[in-house]
Image 1 (tube, helix red, strand yellow):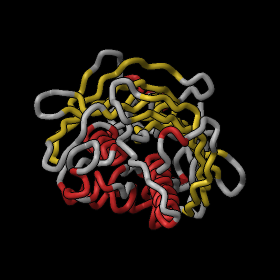
Image 2 (cartoon, each protein chain N blue to C red):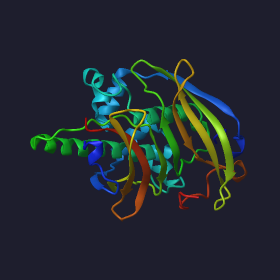
Image 3 (cartoon, rainbow over the protein chains, first blue to last red):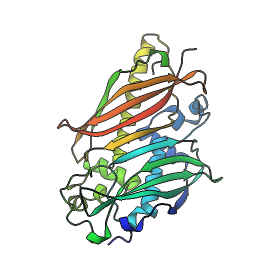
Image 4 (cartoon, rainbow over the protein chains, first blue to last red):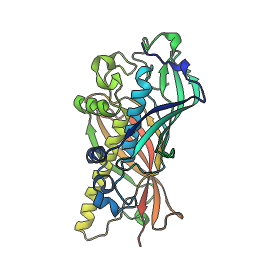
Length: 162
Length: 157
C-alpha cells in the first residue's frame, strides 16, 4: 500500500528529490544507445560543436530526472504514469562530473472527471546545479490513485487518458 | 543535416520504425523509469494499462535515435554527392508531448516528423531554430505519441 495518494499533494509544496553526480561513462553510454551525436559522444568532436565540450543528451537528463523522482517520491506513491508532458526546457548543459539535484514543486491538483479514483497533480520538476541554477525544467501532470478509493483496484481496463 | 535556408515548413520525413521487445522494455525501465507496470507482466496486467507496457520516455528516446540515424544516412548521401553538410546544434526543449496509447510488447512504432516552423535567430548569428511535429504510429494505425521538438540548425555562411 503506497504512502502517498493524490490527496497528499497540494499547490506550493516543494520537495527535494535527491542529488547525484552525472558521470562521463553514463553520458557516453546513453548517447551511444539513444542520441549518438558528437556533442554527447566524444570530447574532441564535442569541442567543435556549439556546446564547446561534451554534454549530456537532454533526453538523458529527462531519464536521469525520472529515475531520481521515482527513487525519492514516486516509488512510495500511487503513481499511475502521465498522459503527456506540457513542456521541457533545457536551460543549461549537464557536463561530465556535474552534481545535479532534483526538486518537485506542486503547481495544481485536480480530480479526474471521468474516473473518480484518479487525480492529476501538476508539477514543476527541476534539475539544479550545485550553485542552485536550474538546468532543466519539466512541467507535467501525472496521475495518482485517490485515497478514498483505497488503491488502484477497479481501474483495470479503463482508458489511459482521463 | 540540411542548412537552415534549405528547410521548408511542411516538409515531412518517415524516419524509421522500432519493435519494442519485452527485454527492451524492461531494460529501459530498470535503468530510467522503474515503475511496476514497465517491469513486470503481472503488475502490468493488474494496472490501468492492462499489460506490461513501455515507458513513455522509452518511446521518445527511440524517436531521437531514429532521427539521428536518419539524418546521418542523409548526410552520408550528401557527402557522396559532394555537398556540404550543416551542423545540427543543441535543442532548447520540447512541448505538448502526448502519450496517447500504451506501447505494449511486440508493438511496432513508425515515427514521422513534419517541419512546422523555421526562423532565423537574432541572438545567435549563423543559426536558425526549427520546430518539428513528431508522431509515432503503431501497427494498428493508432497514434501512440505526438510532440513538438525544437533544434538549432546551422545557416549558410
